[in-house]
Image 1 (cartoon, rainbow, N blue to C red):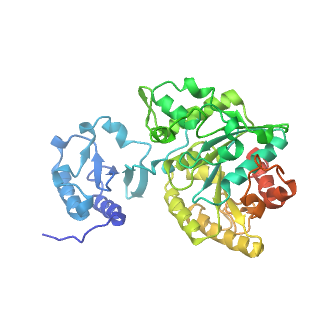
Image 2: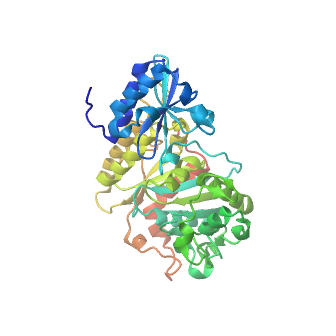
Image 3: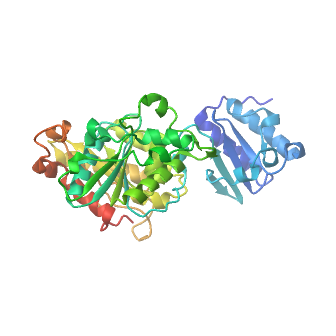
Length: 435
């Protein structure tokens, strides 16, 4: 008996793919490998278990032997569509990823994950037309919420109506900056999700948006839907129920529910721009707001090894996205908290690290003659990797315009964020090409 070396998670898929390739097309011209929540892998094939062929029995044994802890016992090593509810639909699931296409054999991966699934799912259908922007940071503490509030103020000065959704539900921040306690609406986003879960979201829909006093004397308006409202009550029990995959008596993903909520707000408010303040990190909430909501995504970063390594995890995952050619054109890197000294050197190094990230994972490999390739030079101002800077300023570290009698210092804002705000407006409202 051949003894196989133990297999770790990162090698298990490679082993399964090699075994599938070695079988050729004997199992069919397409094989879907299903990886469960523990990381165990087995193929899904048409037919029934009781009708399995000798070739399939032999393949199941080889896969079991090769995968070790990440395999199934031989009698359970292969799934069959006719033994599953909606097995044929699972076989062609939109969540599967094509991971190999050689010699007439296609091998797909259907990854069953507790979190992370939304990073590779397709954009959600949308009926509204106003632009959207997601403010996202892979790590916190990069000035994201302050930049959001100031840009919203700048847009309201120009007469625009801005609708902001505080979707950083685990750590609400931007709504506290823009809505003092006296201005909070009765309810917030967590209340909508909880009530929608039992089919009565309409009870709170008209009571979860308020105007920020920051725009009180401006020609435009800043409207905010906070994470919580004055009548939300005990927040944590509601937060724990926010992410349920149900709406009333029907099933519906959290992403689909969010899209429905946002569109209802858009139809009622008719904003010039919707800003989604996403939570930091790799949570599925971030995945939905960055890649599935038809929003331009501002990726906030500081030039640190920790930041680039964290983004590399995400970008490496994105290489398998079925719509990578579409959503990568909506990305824009933001250099947050650029230091007061050595700015040119800092931004040069930042740009180089950002470029390395994009060209390794998201840009096409192409020569200079291929004008259709999605690729940019290091210093291309039109490139998503080329950072829009926000300069560090001590006054902005304590930014609290609604509680500071001095209000907003326009000179400080222009010096720190002028370039960012100008370029962001061009990107969102027209003028900047990303392709």
